[in-house]
Amino acid sequence: MEQRDRWATKLGLILAMAGNAIGLGNFWRFPYQAAVNGGGAFMIPYFVALFLLGVPIMWVEWVTGRYGGKYGHGTLGPTFYLMARESLKPRSAVIFGMIGGMLAFSVTTLLNSYYLHIVGWSAAYTYFSITGAYFGKDSVEFLLGYLSNNMQVFIFWGLSVALLGIAVGQGVSKGIERWVKVMMPALYVAAILLVLRSLTLGSPVKPEWSSIKGFEFLWEPRFSEVTFKSALAAAGQIFFTLSLGMGIIQNYASYLGPEDDVALSGLATVSLNEFAEVILGGSIAIPIAFAYLGPEKAIAGGVGLAYIALPNVFMRMPGGQLFGAVWFLLLWFAGFTSAIAMYNYLTALLEEDLKINRKTGAAIVFILYLILGLPVVLDPTKATLDLYYLTELDNWVGSYLLVVLGLFDIIVAVWLFKPDNFWEELHKGAYIKVPGWIKPIIVYIAPIYTIILLLGSTRDYYKAGYFKAVPGYVGAPEYANWVWFARGMMLFILIIGAIEAYFAIKKKYAEELEK
Ligand code: PHE
Ligand code: NA
Image 1 (cartoon, rainbow, N blue to C red):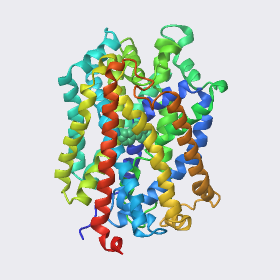
Image 2 (tube, rainbow, N blue to C red):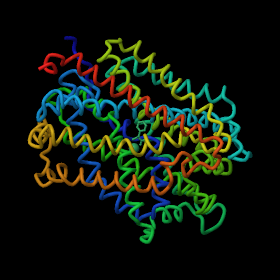
Image 3 (spheres, rainbow, N blue to C red):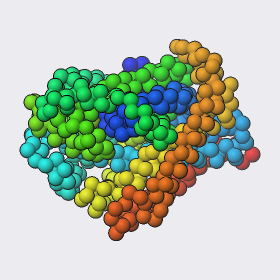
Image 4 (spheres, rainbow, N blue to C red):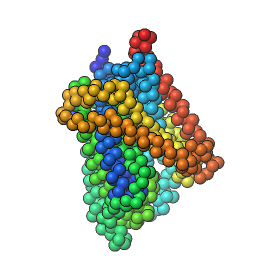
């Protein structure tokens, strides 16, 4: 058997994992999630979820990935099958392989299909900052104008996806690892530059609006706003920001050697991401927006904060062209180094299960992402920034499926694989000894927490009308067909994912399955 690709250096591995986790979630999703969910008080359920869910599941995923890699698998179907087989007959283990493969395939195709668009917007806005294109214009109008020009959207999006394809096509050690070694240090430099700018802004508009006030506003504990709902939001943010429940931490860990450390490296990934989220991410967007726009406009969530509120600020800020470019370049690097992991998952799937060579596989994935991203461009509700297709996918794939997969992570890699085996794997080649009292957290508390999160989100989604034919967020019912299109797409991809996993397992383990 040919040698499976492996990370060439420890530094490269850690930067790749940090790049995987550090994404738009840190600089764009985290600040407004924190701001609307109780500011400083949000951080209490956030840190609880970090310790009870984030760290445990991060370890589970590293262990899972390295285990699968030993048998030549970088995807969840065959890996879950092998782990579940520790307790189950092959025929039952296949079920878990299919569930894992189905969920990871769906997340890596669908989540990335719209995430790549936002990566493309970031590239475009980097360019528009340098040229000052949005300066002196209405920021909402400008974004709408940009989105309505399909040719332009296509250029920046297509270019970003093409660069990803080139990097992934070069391989893990020769491609991804080399790219992140340049991009991640650049990302940190950009972020630190922006933090320094942010914290020295003073009060350019009103004395009560300085960036420091914005910083205080973000961190001010508004305990009354800490509700069950905000605790769910905090736990959901932990999943999203650490790239958990997506299959991509496992995929990256599958390129480890069988004796490479996972315990300390998993912890390092969490630490690097949290530094980039809580310290850097919390000190840029909201304080900058606050200084110029005041509290209400600063916490405009979603697309608004990064692509409307901040452009509005850069055009008035001294050196705005430069800082605008640095901000959007930061988002681009952050998005790129996360999207590359999803891209690699699908390339690995083609490589391992269908024996398609990496370069061809990367080209196929390029075309796949362009096709799957097309509905986002064609969706008529982009004209009002409602983006029904994208929103529907994001609600289910980007917030919900992750948690479902997180639960199966534990069911398969801890319970079915057996807690003692898991604990042994975690310590194989480990640079640290994980204290024994953490074991029950991984075996019992994390799955219970995940189930509560799942039930709570289901209830909230139900209440918000997400289960309806015309969901709660749809303001223009005549376009509800785009929501149905998204639902059909999800169903289709889930089915393909399950079938793919089944054949991938069968192809390699047919003999034992027949027994
Ligand atoms: N952890 C990533 C982030 O914070 C999440 C992600 C990974 C999203 C890969 C898309 C693709 O943005
Ligand atoms: Na992140």
